[in-house]
Length: 78
Image (cartoon, rainbow, N blue to C red; front, side, top):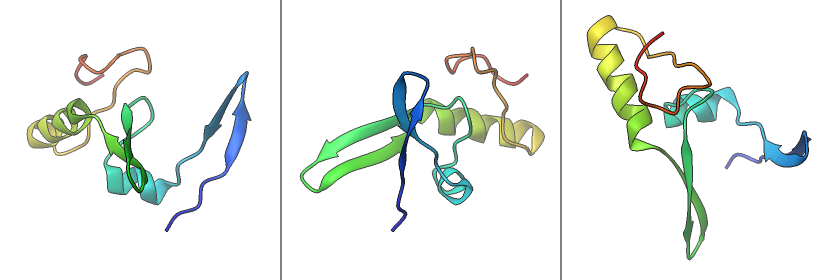
């Protein structure tokens, strides 16, 4: 189990995900995560488009894609 702490980020509240968790989810800064409510609590899953872009980029170049923060997910590699 990974424990996450809440912190103030500007006028919002957020958390920082450890590198190990990001790697396991196969996400990076700027990617979209979904919090799905279940009977046991919340399940955090990456967006399908995150994994599709990473898989596509890995096949083409051998490295994960890097997207601009302003790119909502459809912009390919930069």
